[in-house]
Image (tube, rainbow, N blue to C red):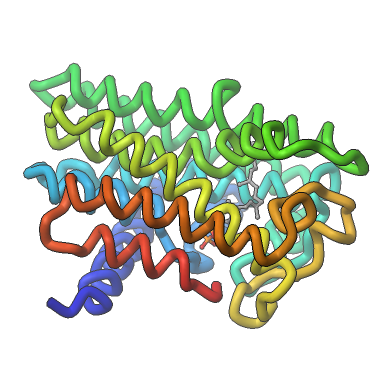
Length: 292
Ligand code: GRG
């Protein structure tokens, strides 16, 4: 099977659906444009790809799961817009383009992030209300909200900000990344499983996402040292400049690479329990070897 082609088709399908996801009618054009500017700027779409892939592999309908996949991408995009703000990481470049606040100003960028987050929840709830088998949709919405908020990404970001200019140990570093980056990746996999109505694989799907999330973050840390800004679409060396603790600064490059491979191998064992076709394993390996 040509997994590379399947991955590209999935990314294209997500991109095509995202184009009309935000309703234009009745909202100020400034916010509509600012939301779509970052949402449609590119990116790997890895969270929605994971949600749809897990859902399909466990017998679910990816068309039904699509609003949740798109909502997940909106939440991820909001987090990038806010993370780039002067009050946070103060970045100029994201997804190969000037950051949202550089184009629309800080106030609109904050509101565009708020709007993407809220529209994600609105869309998931609207989908849930329209469906007869309400519980699984509500459950998937809950898993995603839980991962995005104070039990996940927001707290991870708080730990990140509070740890700046301090050295933190590996336990704290793991907690920070598990929440900041891992939570949305884990929630994508678990929500895919829930939307497939497969209770038996929930633990495996969450475990897969957890291992993948940490491996993903370690690679992100490595790329901040070794990556090509052109390919990454963002500046590199930022973590060092901001005096942030990363896997590379705490463990060193060699140990970080070994750890990323260990988490990836662990994820692959679980991926094989979810998806016999090998596509999920392919995605997992692709993320380990990525350069963008
Ligand atoms: C503002 C609450 C709040 C949280 C921000 C996501 C995040 C938390 C910060 C982004 C900083 C960062 C580089 C985190 C490392 C991992 C990560 C989320 C990378 C970006 O995700 P990719 O590689 O990006 O999936 P694309 O552009 O491909 O979607």
